[in-house]
Amino acid sequence: MAIPYFPKFMGSDKSPMAAGLLIPSSAPLSSPLAPPILTQDELKKIAAYKAVEYVRSGMVLGLGTGSTAKHAVDRIAELLRQGKLKDIVGIPTSKKTYEQAVSLGIPLSDLDSHPVIDLAIDGADEVDPDLNLVKGRGGSLLREKMVECVCKKFIVIVDESKLVEFIGGSGLAMPVEVVPYCWKFTAVRLQSLFEDAGCIAKLRTAGENGEPYVTDNENYIVDLYLEKDIGDLKAASDRILRLAGVVEHGMFLDMATTVIVAGELGLTIKNKQ
Image (cartoon, rainbow, N blue to C red; front, side):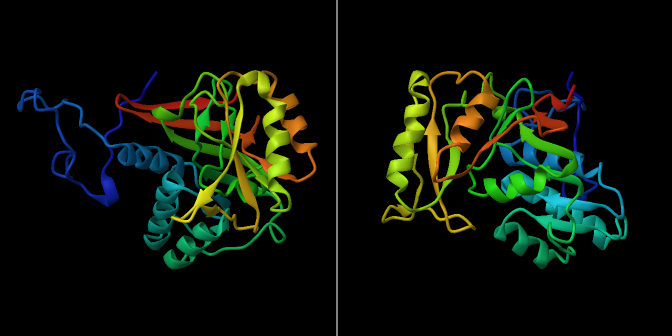
């Protein structure tokens, strides 16, 4: 069941309309309960702010990467400035998040110093009914998985467009990080693993010249596009990781403890069973 949630954006006490949110033109102006029409980014912010409510002073936090996680990092910094949070240590999952956190004054460390993390907050590209995830379309899947696999709690924040019936069900990329050496050889082998699911493997590129996208770890990413369900996800994971040349894949299996979904009707909180 969705929880109606009408946030005060960026610490504002204004109503949704006064804060610049749009009200349906067909709604009577006298109706105080007319729901605002929220953009996808505003839905992400709602989910992110809700997730930060789980943060407590003194925690070691995994700081996620991407457009949704960015809102959570901003909110954590805001609460630190206000004195509502204290003694927070952040473990960033990418160079981009590191730079954001440094600019906001969030104290940072790493896994060498903090091998166990209290809580991580991050977005996801897909969430299936069992709370398995696809992550890494932003390119940070390896560091995200390293951080989020050692968390006591892992809260995933998404808007409802990320919900799928099966992994790969969006028709968008399921990323695999690979070493640059003979990446074509690796891509062909990856595609052949899931031929029955109509898999197409494509090297991720960046820029106008089509140069390979390079991760923070100086690797490439091969994106797998799937037409059908690949079945047993743990078996699929093992098959991918057994290929020499593969560094890591973007399936995050049995890792999320809570998923917060923001939709037009409010928030839905799904907990791991």
